[in-house]
Length: 160
Image (cartoon, rainbow, N blue to C red; front, side, top):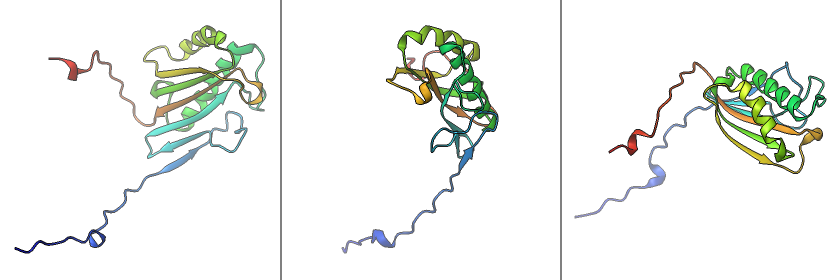
């Protein structure tokens, strides 16, 4: 019997799936303070929001310390989410950057006002410095589109 070789180079190439990358801009907050987009919507479903600071529309740090900056950062985050067809409820992950980890409790209190139920997964880090002398920066990943939220207990796959 003769074996038959298949030339991989001549095999048909599968068509590439079209993917979309949409640049999201909210005119309701300050313009980016560097070469980045406020957010990117991937495939019309996942929204990646760049870190937002507690800045007013003129890109000035708001007065009132870390509490006021956190509140303004979350307001700015909410405006970008809306521009991308999302909401605070649709946020699945946030990352908080703090200049001083001693501000953790204060930031948590303000954060809890915005994420009342079904808070997203989150990480918080202390960093040496943030842009423009800010005390806090918050980035997020959210779902864009019609949202359905469900809640389950332990993973069903662990049940015997």
